[in-house]
Image (cartoon, rainbow over all chains, first blue to last red):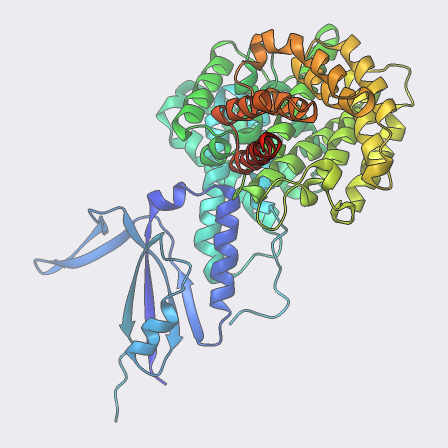
Amino acid sequence: MPQYVLLLHSDGEAWKKLSPEEMQKKVEKYLAWRNKPFVVGGAGLVRDTGRVIRAKGDGVSVTEGPFSESAEVMGGFYTIEAADFDEAVKLSRDIPHIGLGTIEIRQVMVYNT
Amino acid sequence: MQESGSPVLLEHLFRRESGRIVAWLAGLLGSAHLQLAEDAAQEAMLRAVQAWPFEGIPAKPEAWLFRTAYNYAISSVRRGAVFRSKADALVAALETGAQPILDLDREQSLRDDELRMVFMCCHPKLAPDAQVALSLKLVGGFSTEEIARIFFSDPSTIAQRLVRAKRLIREQNLTLAMPSKPHLERRLNSVLKVIYLLFSGGYAAHSGEELIRSDVCLEALRLGRLVASSSMGAPRVDALVALMALQAARLPARTNTTGDLVLLEEQDRKLWDDSLIALGFSYFDRSIAGDQISEWHVQAAIAATYASAASSAEIDWSSILEHYDQLMQMTDSPVVALNRAVVVMKVHGAEAALAALTPLAENNALHKYHLLSATQGHVLAALGRLDEAKAAFSAALECHCTVPEKRFLQRQLAMVSIERHETRK
């Protein structure tokens, strides 16, 4: 079955507005969602600034980044299985991340040999 | 994907641990650095919500939160320009003080930290509404928005109140040390008052927010028990805990399924929380062990009389009136006098109740208090003075009250109007 990756971009300000009680409710909702049978993987990303490597002359340059203009930072991803894109979107409609940032859905490429 | 048998979070764990982390770190850093303690607690929760949805809940979530908050505090002090010359001393205080908590059994030590925080929040230099807001924020782990919702206030008003209170703590150097002997008794009285203010704030019925309000009641009850079980325990503390437990037991019966108020006498006693009633009576028994009788004792005795009646018809109104008479000797609270008038009506009838109410109409503290007008309306209706009753219920509706209360008053007003119409026919 095709796999889709849900890239979770987090709005740090929206998170900070939550009370401890609300944060706990969120964690519980995420975990319940993660437990659904179609979720096959995922990982969180450390929020601290990463590194960006690009070509510079003959070598490479390493800088801190990316610094996005918006407050949204990629906070992690889930991988799900779905028959097609429509189903992937349908399954993702109740992900608890909604309201705390945006979700980008991309299909995992498979090479048919 | 989740392993079976992975840990489940205890109810209110974040809120509870947030208060405990603040009390713990503020204890190590000193009350001048309350903000850092709060930031560290918030950061720990934020990291948890970012990590746990993917990694699952760690084996020891409380320890995880404490460790994360601690690490954040250390690194903030190290890199923060504001701490400058004090940074080394603060890091040392954190490093030496934190280890016992991070390593082993922390319950007793944390209880002491919390207790100190409660006592600081109730410092007499802070205004009563600031004491309440601070206790909810720092000890209870409620957010500014939640506190605003509980007290029908604006979040920015609460935020401002908190900022001012914290500034005052810094400027006046209010420490987390327990007050010295001569001041201890008075401070304890102020702590008990704040705890009961918290409780009453949560107890005021308000539709849609039932959950958070009963959370506040239970938090007040928890704080009362915290004080009762400490070296500050005293019979009057037990009495306050008894009072809160017996009143909180009625929370589930206080509104019906449509969110309308149900008066005490009409409540379904089967809905009362038996374990809270049992808790209330056990604290009530403990409270009468001493030889002092406080206002809390008398209030608890009133709640116990209600709770021990097998049905509404069997409520012992004359002994409740005796308790109120005793209470009137101890306090000049107009609200107590108002509640007494309601009981006077039960025992001596509406005419006597009206006489008891008359002096209260002059009291400024009850100006625009909906329950005064509502009680007047109730008494006047019983006397058949329907025009005046109607005016009183209308006046009550002009005052600030909750939505279920408003609906209740509207029903009363409608009933009086119908009755008035019938008698005119």
